[in-house]
Image (cartoon, rainbow, N blue to C red; front, top):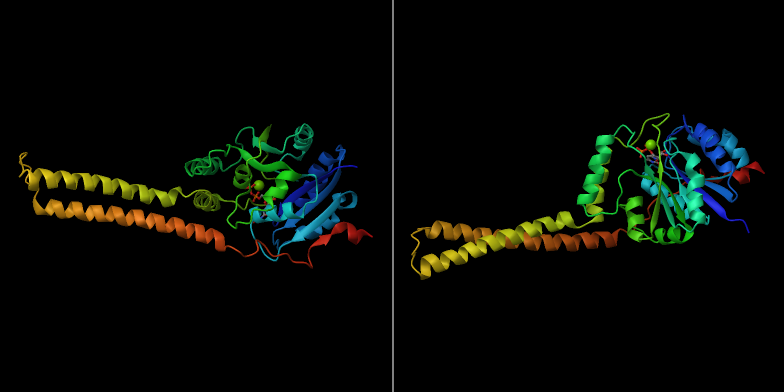
Length: 319
Ligand code: UDP
Ligand code: MG
C-alpha cells in the first residue's frame, strides 16, 4: 500500500502569497514524490481572503487539501499543533505559507525518512533573514534557559515520522514551542541545510517585540531556572551572613574581640536581617516552583477552537 505524506501549513492572513506558494512552490515540489499526499492547511483565524485564494488555486484541483479553520487567531504554534493532530500521514511535514521555507527540499527530507530518520529538521545555511539580531538573542535566551538542544538556525520546516507525531499529540501544555517539545520528546534528529529566502509578500507577524515575548515565554515554560535563581541568591545570602554572624559571635562576644574589630550591635542586627532575607528568598523560590507546577497541571482548556463551518475538505466540494 502506498504511504501517505501530510503537509501541514499554518496560515494567517496570507492572501497575497498563498496561491503562489501552493501553485509555484509546493505543488512542483510534490509532483515527483511517490507517496500519496494530503495537505492540511490550518487557518489561524485569517480575516482576509486567504481561504478563497486556496479554493481558486491550481493546487486545489490536483491535490487533496483539507482546511481546519480556527474561530480566532491562536498563534502559529497552536496552528502547527492542530495540523499535527489532523494529519493522517505516515510522515508529517510542516512548512510555512510565506515562501520562506524552500519546498523543493522536501524530497531531501523524504530521502532521510526512507533511510529511517524519525525527525528531519531544516537548518538555515546562513542567517539571511532580517531579524538576525532578534534570532541571535532568541537562541541565546533559549540556551540560558537550559534548552541546550536548540540548534541555531533551526526552522519550523521539518518532517516527523508517525511515531513522533503520535507522541507529540499527547503533549497538552498551552505555552508551547514546537521545536522545544520535539527536542523534549528525545527522538534522534537529522538535519538538512537549506538556504532561506526573505518573505515574498505580506508582513512577518513575528516582529522583534513578539520575538522577545516568545523568548521570555519559552524561558519560563521550558525551565525553572528563573524561579530557582532567587532561591540560589537566598542560599548565598544566608550562607554569607550566617558565617559572618557566627564569626562575629565567636570573635566578639565569646573571645571578647581579640582582633579589635569593634563591630558592635549594629553589625549583628544587619547580619541577622540579611540571614532572614536569605531564608525568605529560599522559601519564596520553593513556593513559586510549587505554583508553577500547579499552574502546569490546571491548564485544562482546549488548545484551540475549530470553526466547523469554515473548515472544509476541499475534495468533498469538488464532487
Ligand atoms: N502564522 C500563523 N499564525 C500567526 C502568525 C503566523 O499561522 O499568528 C503562519 C504564517 O501564515 C506563516 C507562518 O505561520 O505561514 C510563519 O509566519 P511568519 O512568516 O509571520 O513568521 P516567521 O517566518 O517570522 O517565523
Ligand atoms: Mg516567515
